[in-house]
Length: 325
Image (cartoon, rainbow, N blue to C red):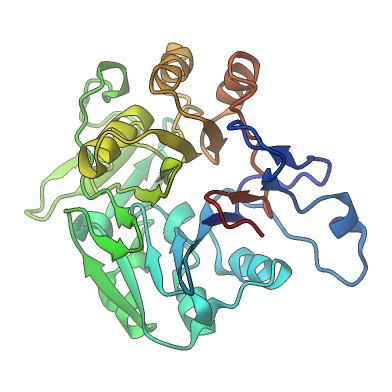
């Protein structure tokens, strides 16, 4: 199994390949590096404030491709697919972690490029209207309006709406709704009218947007354990990992990667060390904070768990399992 970073907040052509923390001579992380960036025959990838991960799963002569999230814009997703040699028509299934634009933004352009009807799995509440209210009085009304399920269907998508875990085959499954049990990952007290993100519920009730529609992706890799992907981890990284273990069984956690939600201004600073300690207790082998994880998380995890930390960048490929490229 490989995971290719298609969209992420940063590009870094100086990052070296990295060996697996499990040992051995085979690279676990390969980079789109200096040679590739300086090759005039190639098109260098771009970064944006979003996330998209391509999961390639192989078992014998069979294979499957799942796209987890689609970045903020179709422009960058299209550019990076071309840069990294990914054919949109080769994607078997798309999973959208939640209804925020930095995760679904490229959906219509992707479907246009794919040229065929493609399943789009997400939570049934992901399309509910969302508002952003700033402290200075500015507001963004229905900023998720491009993710109405009827418009996704018109673009060629097949909305697959489930709050339960959805088995995609070959050891790949969505988490479904993630129980929120870890104390420090809980949301702060709700104050109506305060600046923040809001959502209009199915019955017309206005509520704080705690992103209850967020789902993750789990890949059970033979002989290695679970690889857990998070969109923004609004539900909490540790909650997501624990739920993955509940669903699949008490398997080792080979890797956790994606947004960790630790870079938000309202996230308590102590959550960084609490999260790192919990990941260490779970014995996670590879940790790749991405997107919304924040500088404090990168600094702390890279220092305290250096052997397990992977710095993210567009074009990076993480390799798992016995079949390496």
